[in-house]
Length: 367
Length: 211
View (cartoon, rainbow over the protein chains, first blue to last red):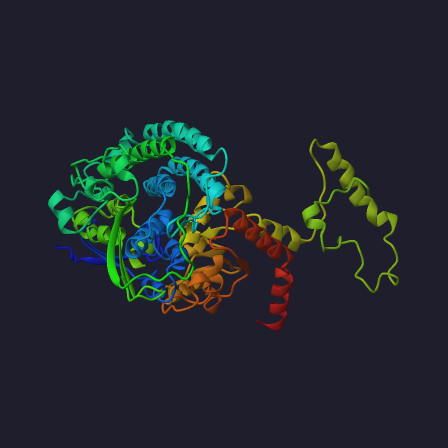
């Protein structure tokens, strides 16, 4: 007797402990095999692009913290401030540019730690989550001493940064970096050669180099597929051209490669912060910018390397106090597009592993 | 009777069962020694056991103490505040020590922490999650956005101006985002609220009404 079979449509999310926010995946299943995945986004649409048209250039710094990717508030501020500074022709003092690089990279480490912890917890390794958050709290302490905030800082200002580093901060940061490198090795003892972890990630969710480029993937997702592209190298902003660092690139394109790339990136970030701390010049931290700043008529597109990839901001000004139009090119949005290609043909249990490995933040996807 | 031990958490607000109700205190005679003697004997026996003791409390206080000490929240994060909620669960703040263990399904949860901004699109889903939770259920509104719309209040077409438009909120935690300490304070406030609740009396009253 022939058993009647049919494809099953399964909703994952918006409330699901492993979708990292409010993402709904419409998964078409044949038994346990994934035939198709359609991400349904928009559950966290904050209309931040529209809101920015109603706020002055200075006020918008506080908005990009919250409205865009909330894990990387400082990197968002970096992209936004860079765009306005380019449009209005504001020259940032050297010291501020070094401080920005330090904070960008520290925030990159903090973001990767959240990713590693939550992804490992999805795969069943609870210890990694606790260890990662232990070190993340130390970074947040360093942030707090300078910016006063843990998550949303509003620290970068147009033409510089809000406050100078307090006394002894550079030494504390250096001590943390030394400590942190040993901790990264410790995470590797838990995962890198763990047979369960290898079985869940190695060879799973592959995406080819050509597909990664065609789908517009960027950041660690693209670099794990062999795309040697990093905005910090390709179009250096701030003082990244004075820093010596490698861009880790792997060619496997699977979940395991994405994991290795991010771990290597954390180590490279430590290298960059060390160089910036060493070469930190003295001097002013902020250029004089009036609170009611008007940007000249025109438009500008600036892109930066956020922890998730190529973060771009397109700013149009009609000469007023507020932007005429802001368009955010969110890396998570493009990376999510590559998800369908990665998941086809894998089992339902792999959906969680693959989704976690691309490291999306829904606030970045929906904006 | 001075060997009687009462837990400080249970002593508040609840009279010992032997005490007469207020108002009729003068009318009722004091209990006779023969009535107290069996209890005193029991206390004397219990005190001989190492670590032994006798606690007198009301059923309701004991029940509420248990409920307040094992609040199971739903793992449901919306936006930035969810990261601080995760930090509160993690190593430094460790909500486990307060008996708070996250559950992945609303059917096992006592508490939903609305962490982050709720869009108009997610609002009916939050409502449904809340409806799926067994009673008695509690809601903590974490952060400015869940409380009142926060920085997304003006010039915005997609964010709900406060989650209390959809579900009833017990504790509001302000902040953008609130620090994990603030969330812990909110949970302590909720525990206070749970301990004050006359749930048995409410149920008895409802049963008498025929509800």
